Length: 176
Image 1 (cartoon, helix red, strand yellow):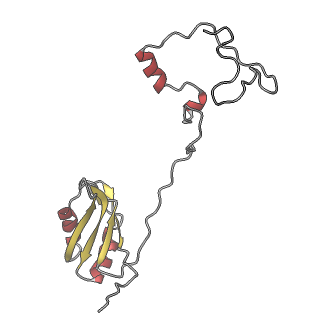
Image 2: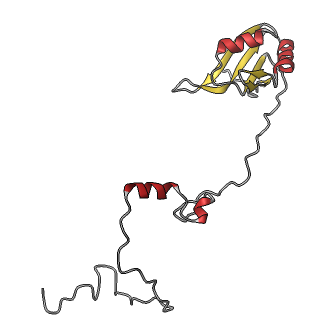
Image 3: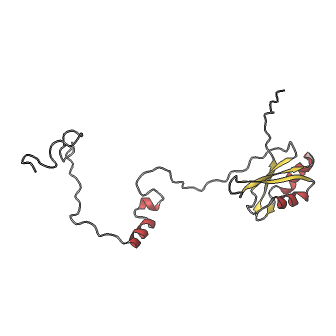
């Protein structure tokens, strides 16, 4: 070590002159205990992770002090499904049980009238039901009767939502 070399003093590489240890308003720094805290065991860490450390953490606030997501205090209001007038034979059937099959849907609507087609919409990759589907009846009158008879009816433990299916407003442009 060179005689004039003093570690930790003077310029730090590329950061400019060292600032004084006090801030501009000369506020004292917090004092820290001289002994390091005792190391927690795995189980103590696990318990402290799942138990609220502060009252803010008990209210659902993040532990790191950030407020990235607001805490919702009141329960979310259920949204009423949009009632769509029956203008075609195709019906929307919502709030289906995830265990319902297309044949169950077919049999349910067969009691009201003649069913052309019944399909349940499922996820693209895992093929699980999304909880809704579509039924095509043979006439608009039968579709209207199915809405009157089956809307809010209990089916496989859930109340069905039956209404007219939304149609695509745009007509396809055929060139030719």
